Length: 161
Image 1 (cartoon, helix red, strand yellow):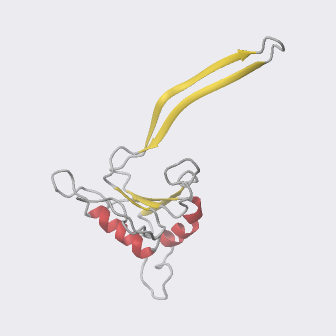
Image 2: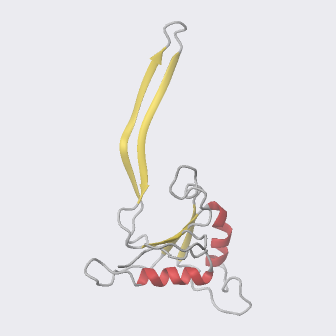
């Protein structure tokens, strides 16, 4: 069995980003063969609370948070995308302002799924003749396959699959 998530809720750090990339590179398909993921441009998806830290980790000329002169290997291959929706109330990760995901967009294409098209309705109040307009629709975003995605709750808590 393989997983595309950190079982220890690894917080976003340079070392844990390296662990995530290594896990992407080692993902297998249903036949146990290596999947071609993790070797090109990657997307680091974070909540807005982690945006500054993610940019510092991926865009520094030298390796972030160290006193040595190591080159930052993520500069130029990782694009940071911050979204307030990761930790938005009503989502599965509500209040998880520490969650982060490393995504290979060549494999895990983000999708927009229109579940129900927008429908409009007008109601007129018989007494005042005031009109009320209603609109309703349902949609979702995400991806359809776990391959090419690595995630962590980032809270340091251990869980099992």
